[in-house]
Structure formats: C-alpha cells, structure tokens
Picture 1 (cartoon, protein in one colour):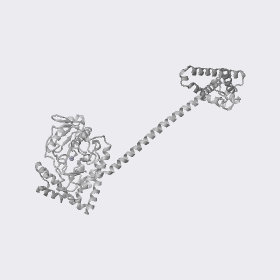
Picture 2 (cartoon, helix red, strand yellow):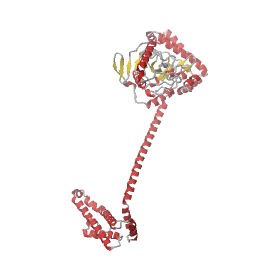
Picture 3 (tube, protein in one colour):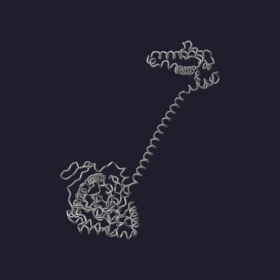
Picture 4 (cartoon, helix red, strand yellow):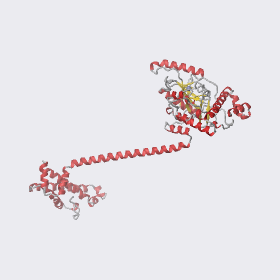
Length: 519
Ligand SMILES: [Zn+2]
C-alpha cells in the first residue's frame, strides 16, 4: 500500500531533487481527488515541500548526533529500511493533512467528490481512515484497556485457584497425619492447629509482690485470699479396665502434680453488669471469695472484672469436682479434686437454660491463666475440660450430675480444642449413661463425644462377652473402689503413702488395697 519501491535505492541516498521526483509519483495519486488543476498543483506543492523539509530534518538529526554514528546505528537505520518506512509514513500524513485542508468541509460534498474522483480504492480507504483516526484511536485505547483488565482478572483468578489448590493439599496432608493418631488426639490436633501459636513453656513469673504475681503473658494473680488444704495425691489408672485386665500395683505411683484443669461457674447471684453497680458487684465478689476460701472450693476464681484470685494453692486439692472422671493418653483419672486444678468463673446460667456467659475480661483472664497453668505444670490440651463434662452420679450411674459448662464453653478462645467432641471416660470406661431429663437439660441431646463413648463401651462389653448392663454393674463397683482408694490416699499421712509406694507390694495394707481394686 505504501510507496516503497524495491528496485529503487534507499531514499537516504537520493538528492533533494531526486527525492522530490520520487515522492511526486505517490502524491499525484491523491491529487486525483481534485478536479481543478490549480487545486491539484497547490496540493502537490504543499505536500512535497513538507515532505522534503521532513527528510532534511531527519538527515540532519541522524548526522548531528555523534553517538548514533559511534554505535553504528546510522548505517543500520538506513540499511534496514526503517528510514524509508518512517519517511513514507510522514508522507502519507502530509498528504492526508493537505487533503483535509483543501477538500470541501461539508461532509456530503466531500463524499460525492471522493466517490467521483479517479483515485484508487486503497487511496480512498487510506484517506477515510485518516478522517476517522480519532475514532480509531479511541477504539484502540479501549481495546488495550479491555485486554489489560482481562489479563489482570486472569492473573487474580489463577492466583486464587493456586491458593485453594495448595490449601486443599495441606488439608489432605494434615488429615492423613491426624488419622495416624487416636481419635481424641485427632480432634485436639485439628482444632489447635487453627489457633494462635502457643507453647506452654513460653510463660514465666516476672514479679512476685506481697499480694500478687505477674507473668510474662500479662497474667496477674492476686493472692490475698490464698489458703491451703490437704496435699494432692492420686493414681493414674490404666485404660480398658472393662476388659477386667489385672493391673499391677507397681505402675500406679502416687502423683502429686496437677495434671489438668476443670472449669466451673460459681452459680452465685449476679447483679446487672453496669458501671453504677461497681461497688455492689465487688461486694458480691468479696462474699464469694470468702465462701470459696472457707470451703476450699476452687484453686482459682476469676471475678467479673477479670481479676484472677488464687484461693486453694496449686499443691493442694480443692473440693471442686467431687464424683468425676476424665482420661487422656496416659490413663484414667477418678475423683478429679486430687488430680485437676479447679478454675471457677464468677457467673451464672440463665434460670431456664444452661447458657453461661463470660464477660470480655473473664475471657481474656481465663485464657491467660490457662497459659500460666499449662506452662507451669506442662498440662496437655487434652486435660483442660469442664465440670459438666466430667461430673457423674454413681448412685444412679448417670453423667452430668453437675452441669456447669455442660455446653457452650469457649474452648477455642482459650487456645484449647473442643472437648465436646471427645469421648468421655465416664461413659466409655465405666458405662455411665444419661436419661431424658439430662437430654432435656442439654437442649434435646447429649454432646457428640457421649455418643462415641457409648459405642466404645458397647464394643468392649461385646469383647468381654458380657451384656452392657452386666458390664455396667461391674464397672459401678470398680468406680466406687477407685473413688475409695483416692479418698484413702487423702486421709493417710502423705509420708506414709510415700513409704508404701517406695516399698512397693511388700507392704501388706498396700497389697490388699491393690487387690481390692482388681476385683
Ligand atoms: Zn462446678
């Protein structure tokens, strides 16, 4: 379409007169738009003059910049045809501009003239394109924008696809890892993975003053109401006693360290939690603290403003859990007063439901205290549980005798896994069960872990070739024996217990006690 002629040497080698002659051949084709000779001549002269001026300007520019010559660009620009093409483009621009100036401005008149003229189709098309150049520029810009947006959208979409693919792969890997461990551990594992990074060994005591302790995680424990009780003492029982496996006494050492935490509510009277009640709310807390100290009810109390009080010191048992059972990977615990720390929140459930509510301050303080205790005693996540989940009534073999936090405990906010999904040992080991009243109290059904535990108990009865009822009768006796054993430990002198442990089975009372446990 352009006027480049292969048999002609590069335009750069032509003199001005030769170039004028060369360009005039192209310009003449466009001059056919004009009927009148003087118009045609004016068009020819103007266009050629502009083009020659441009060529001279280009030559001058190429020669005056020494770096173009030094880099060898001068010859390259001319020999590759770039020079010719550039001038050709300029020529057509000049032609179109002149046509625009000299043709009639009325569009209908102009169209008639174009149709009538002897100019070739390509010539006419080129001129029409020039006329519509703004529209064409707009279309080109719009196309570029659409292409860019499309590219951006595709990039974002691909990144999201990649992310979700990687996430699902990680989840699959995690599932595979979890399935290797036992079910309870799997539940604990999967929930804890989503919680903020926390390692128990990270918390330490920063400051200890007359009536408080301050810890590295920001926890502050008030000690004004601290009191003592009898020293802890308990056994860890082996799992699967339902199979009536004989258990040796040697493995059952007396333990003194707290192994877990049981969370409670005070179920005391609550005043509306408003600023004008400040003094009365604190008055209630003082009354509660005095009651807890007198009865040695809990190891810790967290008031409604999030203040943490240590009442019964950690080394001593508090009377918080009574008849209760829990288990972990190490074994089964019966009578959790001896083995678990009792942490009580000053709160109450609504009269018609079991829905307890914590204040924001209690939630934060409870989380911090949990970290302190887990750090100090290396307490496993699996052993942080609530009273409602561990409480039993051996007289009727029912669970949930005390029902504080039998549902809705905010485990996740405390950095703990959901224990409502864990099979409770009260049901799976000892065959405790539930009735309509308990289900109603819990809002229609028991928590998911109980169903798992029931299944487990049934399976074990089957393995022992007894009915679940017979197995339950035996396990009720077993529970009573375990509880009595714990109580005897408590009444015996700590030093005496220590001696009997060290002399192992040679001590007659200890042996008979262990025999009693095995029947
Ligand atoms: Zn309780």
